[in-house]
Length: 277
Image (cartoon, rainbow, N blue to C red; front, side):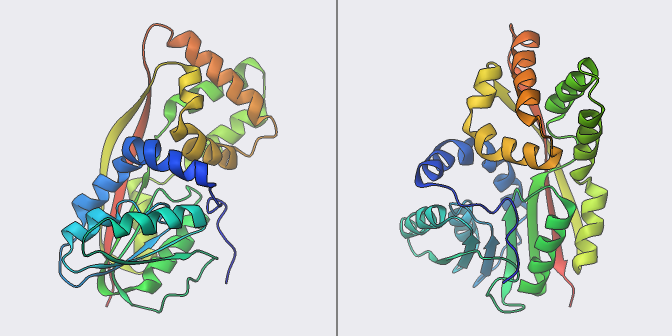
């Protein structure tokens, strides 16, 4: 097996419970709903879900695709265990969840009618590897769906980091935040990446969404931030003083939004395409 992507780390049982209870309905569902809206319907579907975490939105996929079989992979055994339990609660659901150990996965070439993934790493290289694996797994004329935050997401945090850099004359922080902003794809770059991987009839659906928090502490204590946003912010920025920068962001949120709700913008994108014949 190849190397495991940095995002694909093991979640503890307690993190998995928090993820399923708070992150899935309030955040990951923003991406899952766009993906489900774009799903090409059919019967006897074979669906592969890469980096499936706790198996969302697999039960909804099965509800839309008659007699579908779902195969998921993830790096977290605790998340996979919950995915299996959830599958047993869906009448008639046929599924199999396996541990992800790197690319390529153990699934055979062109074995699936649909290939899906939610909120992968923003880094272009990791997205390239994911799209290549989906292209390998999806059968000719089969559908690929990938939902993720697009460029312009989390702009409010980026602006506060720029303010920190200006006040502290930290040129390295300025360079890091500008580079991180370019890591996320635009609809145009995402289309080009999907076509390069081997998909055609590519389309990108975009929906602006907003996450609301009551304070800086509320933002940083929120499971969405702890389990989804901060790990990727840290990875994309690559700053030695990441903690100090985030401390400034927390205080700035409390200062600027002391009498209002802090709203964080997310550009929710879903790219879909058909595997070339």
